[in-house]
Length: 508
Image 1 (cartoon, rainbow, N blue to C red):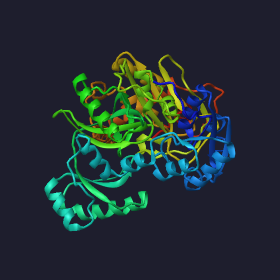
Image 2 (cartoon, helix red, strand yellow; image 1 turned 60 degrees about the vertical axis):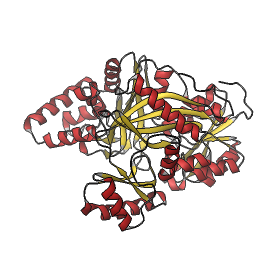
Image 3 (cartoon, one colour; image 1 turned 45 degrees about the vertical axis):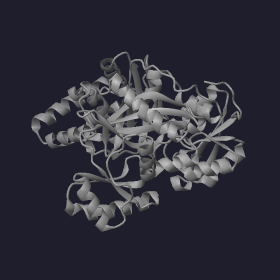
Image 4 (tube, rainbow, N blue to C red; image 1 turned 90 degrees about the vertical axis):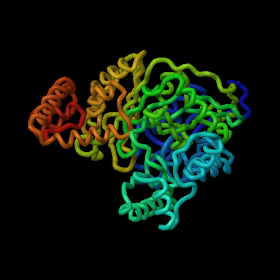
């Protein structure tokens, strides 16, 4: 990487909260860059506020009154003297108008150009650009469908099952499966309505549903001067409602020959945009046919970026900062990948009650420490988990020489993580690491939901209930808090043990 820096960054404001804000602060600190945290009234005592050199109150708890207020974010930058803004992920991270406003204010936006965000945020436009760059795309309509006649004609040509997708969607939202003619028109109308409400854009297009596919993404970083780095692929097929649960790098389905094809497509697509910053090219991979298709490009840092950092040894946040400061990258180097890394998203929700979000105070906390493991989070005892924001609390990340060892290490790490007082999905992560289909890499984007549904169906089986009860009792006994940990003893010994465990499992 070139060392020239024509516009050095001195102070960064992170327009976000939680673990990603803390992660960016660490990257800045290592480069001697001052930091500014922003927070809502609900986050007055949140850990990210105190992880920066200074903080600024944006407004009330609701994101529309705080973290999504562009005017308040720019006011915060001006008030604190910040000369750059990092958007994190979520909130305004892929909002072209926000990036444009940051640059118009004379600040450095640590991310792609507004034009790049805009072109990739429009899924129809993104498909056009990728086809022009010889990146394979999923068969579908070239333009949004705005009338029933064209809708029926396109559906007949593409065939069922198919997907209705919002042109301005992202993050797994604005997608609906259609299996027959009878559902086509009502589902199309509903998708348009939801897209308008969620994205302010009711354009909807059709894609062929690629079934039994894996969701694999390629990490790229561009310098905006023509150079693009490929930093390997990530396996992201374990999803529920199009939301990722567990990710890993590399993918167990990709060999070196296929990796070269992914690399060529990812670099070609990003280079066609003269891309600047960190980004992710997402693909659907039909393993049986050995074919993959462009799905979308996320023009931001991904939640799962740590697994790439673990196998490449490259600091992605640091690269974002360096590129934003104007540093040029060497041209397309061959970055080696070593070992295996897994990440599990720890969320405040109950996976055994249809993932109901959990709110309340964290009454006890124990974060384990071990070699080749990291917990990225914004947690502390006494923290109030509110309903205003995403339920993700932290990320458990491990590295090992092999995938089998990484799976064992993740299970061990999760089994020693304690978050008391609220429900979490930690038991799900432990359970996943023990499934033969997971250990064998035999899964696609439908596997997790199918497995969860099977578990729900078997819940009425007395033998299954006894087995689950035994597992819960054993786990609760093995992971009790110390006597000094506050425990709500209502509900008897079983309830007390479950609450001490911090996994959120209760007697039911």
